[in-house]
Image 1 (cartoon, rainbow, N blue to C red):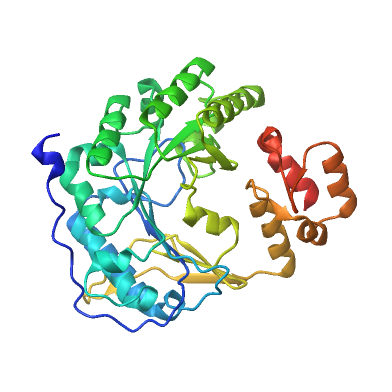
Image 2: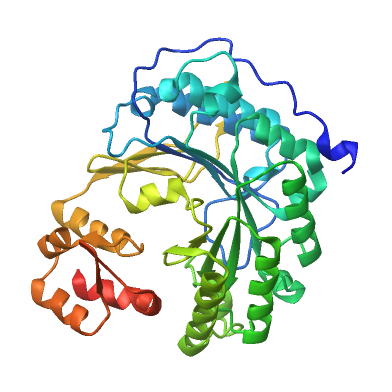
Length: 411
């Protein structure tokens, strides 16, 4: 291995001050980075195409101001049962941000009291059970090993890379900025830099995605041996370019039969290769299940930072407006606003059923019977649409493709 790949990491960033923290755990933290290099055909997540240092720094200033204003939430105590420390930086495309901008934000999270006070940033962030950053292949290839080493120096211990496909024609249709070769090259760079927990995203259910191309995509993904694979069926999101294509008659959706075949192939191939199918769309090598996303499915409190991010604390859900910060004429920075709603007991009941039954853990049988109609549960059990697993009830893998219909019957 060449010297370039084995060079030492950058000097750890030191914290100039630290606030006391008596917490046994912090809420799950999500940071939304609303920047992309291009808009994907299918995506309706809030993002802006922007690569100016001014925009990046104004965004960081706004997020840091939000962190300061929400210090109490970020440092709140949690019960031992639910105490997890995770930071997930998603988007958008976080890998378009320069390292110094990311470092400013991560430092602000640490100084908010969400983690124990220590001298060095990487020492503080090592207290995260999981610290994930989403990246795109083209950014990793273009920025190279130094950028990845910089992420590791921040304390990042998990990388989620949006590959989506290993077919160049499909990638062009998606308006992705990488090709299959770059995806493989980016994965190699991550490994050479010492990243030992890599998740990759794939998409199936496109009408032009033949079973042959999909099976080849699965095999190429498995050849990389990632610790985690997320595979999502293409959906038509209202504000996406794809929705307009459908409305204009320029795209015809895949049939349910095609989507079912591709999902079944996915489950079979990944199961055969030792991946644990722990949630409808997620597969992991044992011990590499996503801690952050699993907290969502358990309705653990979480804090969302940045424009468009959502939070859940107790029975209150809040969300930030989808608006980038702007500099006013007087030199002040205008930031995004927050809205909130109090969830009703019925809202919470429905969420518990919907989220828990996405996973292979399901719900405790006693809890499910308290949340849904007994006769409906018993009927679904008799039809094998639900199954008893120890003291819990879950949707068996061969019925996960129709989980939406099963859950609708229960709620």
